[in-house]
Length: 213
Image (cartoon, rainbow, N blue to C red; front, side, top):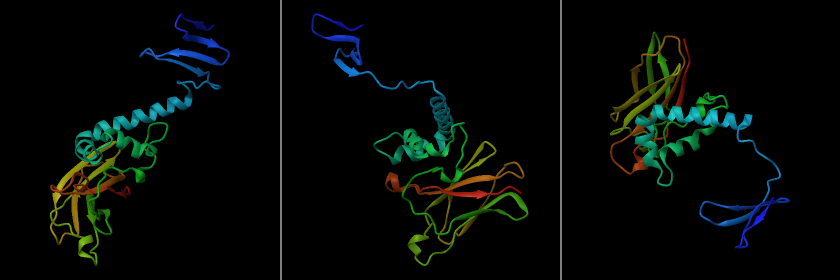
């Protein structure tokens, strides 16, 4: 039942109209929603599971990726929020990464060398080679003064290699990872440099899938 106080302010419900006084003392009258949306519906539960999984992943990479890279990239949004918004579609409603190839591990405008790829070194299961091709335009392939980095996801574990220095004539590097033999690896390679504007210190990550043997 609706009520009218001595100030002429209406509260309660009459028909499909509802009077509301918010915590700041302001008075509003609004129409009752035609549909009720259960905040604990199956759809809402799945969304919360999805958000929880993303936040858990963010907490694991916060010191190595979010804080140094994402926080400095955007001036209008916190790094954690920007990462979540950018990669929300990567997780499924059960809280698992469904699209590893769509995961954007890092952001930035630093140029990536041409033809970047990664593979296991033949005969050495735990050694990975990251290579790129020479470019006709030297400016597109210049790695001098840059560092190569990567994040590897493997069987629920996260491996991180940071700031391996590169020279002008580098076209490949090899790394050894202590991941289980026969495991597939989702590799995210990115480049960095120590000087320059915040959005030019890092490159966007490049995804490489390394099959199990």
